[in-house]
Length: 316
Image 1: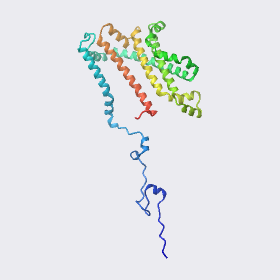
Image 2: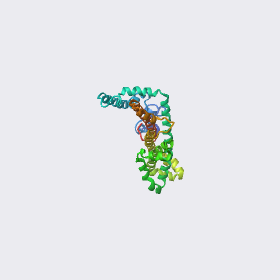
Image 3: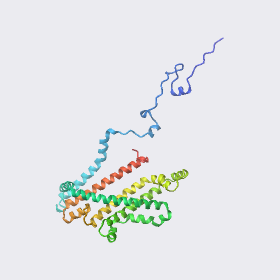
Image 4: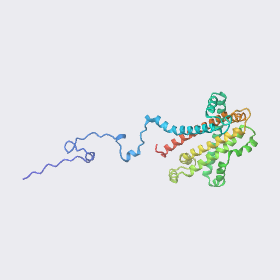
C-alpha cells in the first residue's frame, strides 16, 4: 500500500510576505529585519519627506541670489556713465559715478553722518511701531464688527491711497515744527496698510478652520489668539511690509519739509547739501536712503519666506 508523502511545511504568513521561508522551507534563511532609512524609502513615502539640504553649496546659492542684483547695479552705473560722458548736464550738476563714490566713501567715515542715521532710524522705528499697534487694533475691530466695517472700511482704503505729503500742512498747523508733526504723518501713512493687511488675512481664513475651532470650543479672544490671528499671519506680514514702505516714504518727506530745530537727520543733511549745490553729496544721501530701504525689505522677505515655509506654501 503506497505511503502518503509527508506534508510540506510552509513558512508563516509573515515570513512569506518578507520573502524568507526558513530552514525547513524553500528559499534563503531568515534575516533580521532592518528599519528602512532615509535612502531606502521610496514611492509616495519619499515624496512626503523634506529633501536633504546641500550644505556644501552655500556659496553657490549666495552667488545665484547675488548676481542678478550685481548685474542690475552694473547696468545702472554703465547708463549713468554714458549720460555723464554725453555731457547732458554740466559736471557739477550731473557728476560721474566715480565722483559720487568718492563722496559716498568719505561720508561713511564721518561720525556726524551716523548720528543722523541713528536719529532717522529712531523716528522710523518709533513711528512704524505706533502704526502697527494702531493698525492692528483697527483691523481686528473692523473685521470683527460688520457695522464698523460698513462705516469705515472704505475710509481705511481711501487713507491708504492718499499721498502722505498732503498731511504735512495740517500736521504743521497742529503740532508746529516738531517731532509730533513727523510722527503724525508717519503713523497716518502706515496704519491703514497694516489694518488692511490684517483685514484681508482674516477674511481669507478658511471657513472650515473656523468651524473646527467652534467645535473645539474656541470663542471670543481665544478664537482670535489661537486660530484667526495665526492663520492671517501671511497676509498680515505683507501688510506690515507695505506699511513700512509708506512710513519710510512719509518720514523722508517729513524730514525734508519739517526741519526740527536742534536735530540733524538724513533729510536735513540732504537739504543742506541741496542748498550748497553739492550734487555728489545729494546723490550719496539718496544712495543711503536706498540702501536702508533695501536692507529692511530683505528682512521682511526673510520673515515672509520663513512664514511661508512654516505653512507649507513653498517647495523649499
